[in-house]
Length: 143
Image 1 (cartoon, rainbow, N blue to C red):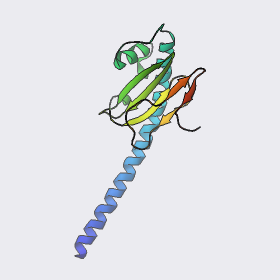
Image 2 (image 1 turned 180 degrees about the vertical axis):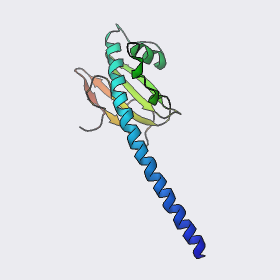
Image 3 (image 1 turned 45 degrees about the vertical axis):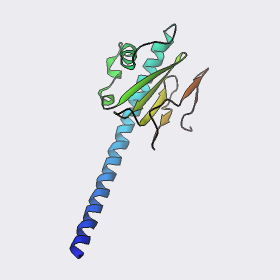
Image 4 (image 1 turned 90 degrees about the horizontal axis):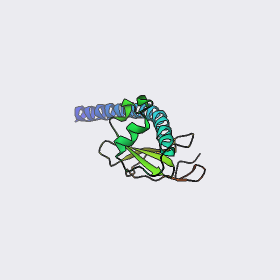
């Protein structure tokens, strides 16, 4: 019986250690993604400003067109995720979601100077930010 309890305790400790390592890696990855997300959303925002009307194209094509001057903005770190672009006349909002497209990870308005929304809990992969005149971002994280 003592042997079983000892094995269970060791297993629990190992799982806890692995979880904290995963959380640290996750935080580091979020930091990298945040920076790259802000740069990409700014490029999409600049692209949208040049358009006379809302683009009727796929997210993939919008992102390629917006980064044609600097393809490195569409960084390889984004590959394991789903990226969505939304036109909010004339502003761009980008949404980064899990690969299955179910879980939101972060959301950014390209006109703002900071990452507007970090999702830490469970949230559906849906746009929540509303950008108003003068780049007033509603629905983001508190400053």
